[in-house]
Image (cartoon, rainbow, N blue to C red; front, top):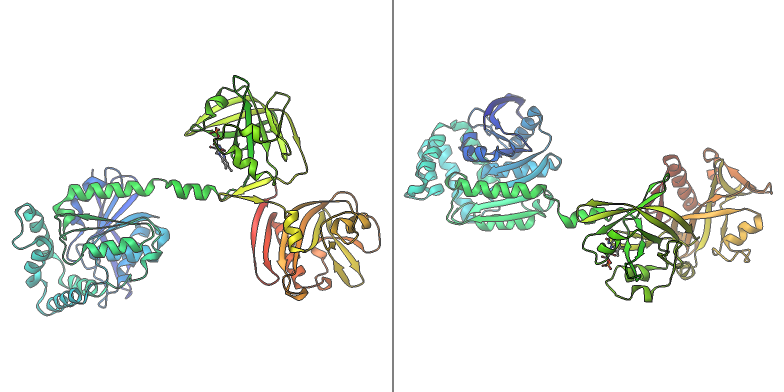
Length: 579
Ligand SMILES: Cc1cc2nc3c(=O)[nH]c(=O)nc-3n(C[C@H](O)[C@H](O)[C@H](O)COP(=O)(O)O)c2cc1C
């Protein structure tokens, strides 16, 4: 792969203009390689060659190394992270996989924790973490020796630590390259960076739990200073961390075992773009749906059916709907051959029916109450709605097939539909049982195009309310109140549930949102008030004011949610965006 050299200008912390030198090769997602103390971008030669086959590989010289400018005198880890940020900005790289070695691993972790939105993944090779007292004393002694005697005197010791003494034959070439780079580094850059390296092993203590991106911690089993225990601990602390240990390798494994390191790096990088099935399902589960039973007749005439929440309306003209059926469903063959089928939208009291048809039970239809549609397909009795369909098409789609039906007949009932969200059944209205148990006050925000209905009494304005929802015959219930006032309305979604401490402990108020079905009678006190003229001061209390303010806001925005909480605090759980 050909590569190009670059030099990106930026400003160092002390205000001095600086520049970063490096090379770039390949196409694909960006992978940035950050070397360790005393090295330079060229140490990554074997990784650049292998990774650039699939990725846009960028290797650069760290501050104070190779062709890059010096760090400030009192160098900080953030200076090196800032260098990386400036480089990405300068090269127009929005997000990248980061691979760091030793000091470079500290830099990429620092960057990942400070700029999580700029990374795709992090690989920390031969990284140090929370050294033991003994390890810390040794590295501090080396830093002091470096300051006193200059770095050329320390090279033999470094080679012995990184490769062994004597250097094994198979590592001789790698050791020679390393020795050459150590000899060429700017002594000031080396010293400043080494001093920082010696004291930064605690920089990420307790912070790796915030590293959400996929992360790899890999070291050599024989690396005495970046130990396998350190990598294991880091991987365990990072939520998406994984640890790999290379047996028989030491500190410079990317140079002494390049093929194995490249294979593992490529494996890790590939794994970061695979979709994690569990997370995918969890994210899909946020989409709230209804629940249906799809049913047909097999060739011998026996009914077959399964629970499906993948139901979707497709077209009004012609009238088309769809459901997706898993190829693993035992009724897949039957449905893929069926000429017609019926879809029943289950009502909120039909959870058991949903469970029954989601099972492999042989006697589903004996245990359910159903009747035949015009096309002879089973329709679940008491469903909120049903659609009788002739097969329009069957579309292959991964591990499912999309069954598209042309609706030939349909029906609906006032029953509340059953909902399904995040792997659990939900209901869109409060059940009568829950209402009875909570004994809430029940009110309604009833709207038409002109505004909402308020009951005026002098300066005081109230929403229509009752001590219960029903029955109509009870003049104290909400429905009874509306009837008494001659107001015709259709209650829709639950809008708010809150505890109001002023009305006594445990007192719950429940408000529905609904539509005024016909013009409001011209009776004393009945007023439809435009949203921008609501008499806020005349409302009963802060709980009502706060709820109505939310209503007005959401109606302007056109989003509706359910409010659950008390008069002061609460969360809004969004239900639907008005079509
Ligand atoms: C709430 C819910 C929704 C479901 N949605 C679907 C769906 O859309 N498509 C599907 O193939 N299976 C879906 N299933 C799973 C099937 O109902 C289940 O695999 C069933 O056993 C299939 O019946 P069969 O094996 O008799 O064909 C769902 C299950 C539940 C509980």
